[in-house]
Length: 137
Image 1 (cartoon, helix red, strand yellow):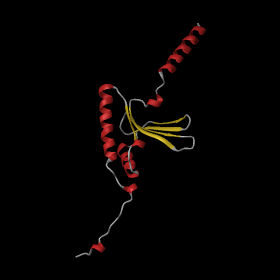
Image 2: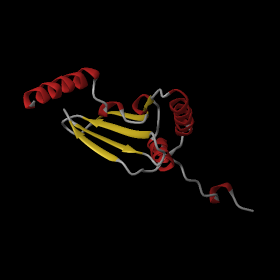
Image 3: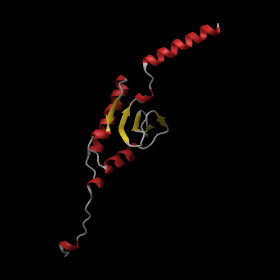
Image 4: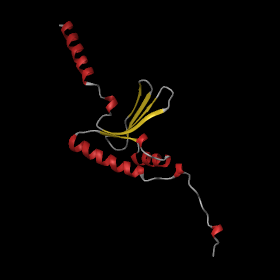
């Protein structure tokens, strides 16, 4: 019989422990995908507002995988967007000019919100194009 002192014990730090939060996030993503399909309504999850451990983040990244589309934007800091292995599920990370992460989201949408032009911008583009067409006539 082994003595209690002979039983190997490995103590995990809080950073190495799964909390169950990542699994809840994955379930929420599934619900958001269903809503996107049913209504066309996009949704997002603010990952920085959740008590995710580094192990949770790694687990979630592994479960979501990587898709084919990756986008990098420079606008007051770098924003990286990549579609996960699940179409319509995007991981979006915004950094400040010092490369610190300031926001991190999972967006469930056909196109991430940061890529969609504002209606006013489209209206101005239409007006400019119409004016250009009139000049060429």
